[in-house]
Image (cartoon, rainbow, N blue to C red; front, top):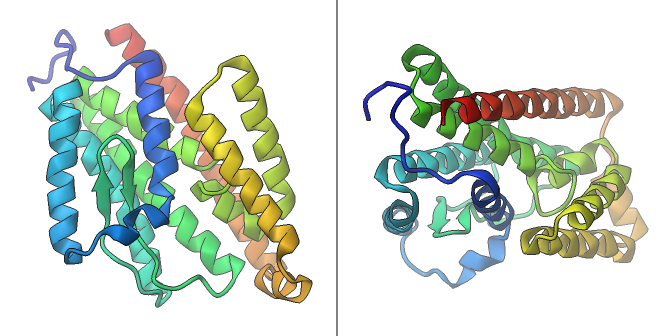
Amino acid sequence: MAPVTSERPARPTGPGLAALMAIGAVLIKLKWVLTALKLGKFTTMFASMIVSVAVYAMMFGWPFAVGFIGLLFIHEMGHAAVLKARGIAAGAPVFIPLFGAAITMRQHPPDAETEAAVGIGGPIAGTAAASLCWGVFLMTGSAFWCALAYTGFFLNLFNLLPVSPLDGGRVAGAISRWLWIPGLLLLGVSLWLRFSPILVLVAILGLMQLGGEFRRPATERARYYDVPFGARVRIAVLYFGLALFLGYASLASHDVLLRLT
């Protein structure tokens, strides 16, 4: 695509874009979707990637489809890098058309600090990828790269909501499990302002996670969430700092995108 602002690349806009990103963000985290897949992990990864690109291309055009899958892939690689560094066995990413992508963990993290590190690894990598797209836009003036940057910023911001099964829910557990409450309340307000089936799904899963914590033995719960104070502070600074940056970047890139189109 020529790097000029007068061109308008095929891409989702408005509610359609937000819905696509939200669906991808939520179902990225539903690990059980992949348990039925029996193919070799890399065969599955590449095959599912090609299928997903083809599906998105029919909706938004090939350039945006490839870019969107690239953003999802880098996000998942952020999770994969932390999993490998922490010695947690995991499969390769698998892409599910219209749903997103997922990496299955073959073992549960040993504690909340490790789970938080795995959880925030994806948004950090995804934010870096979106920032790179924004940098290309600044150099070229292409609305295509601006659209990809906004998509990446918003996708990763949504993922940081402190509600399970999103990444933010995993991170929040290491800071304070009380953060799950305002996360659910925020979802409730969002649903009251504008109904969305995907938000209903997130709310249901979040409530299930909250209920599961109450059923968990107290000693096991105390051990799992026994995170040193210094680690809590570091995770909190990283989490809230990233959320603030993504919030600003999403608003700024969206404003620029509206002016370009």
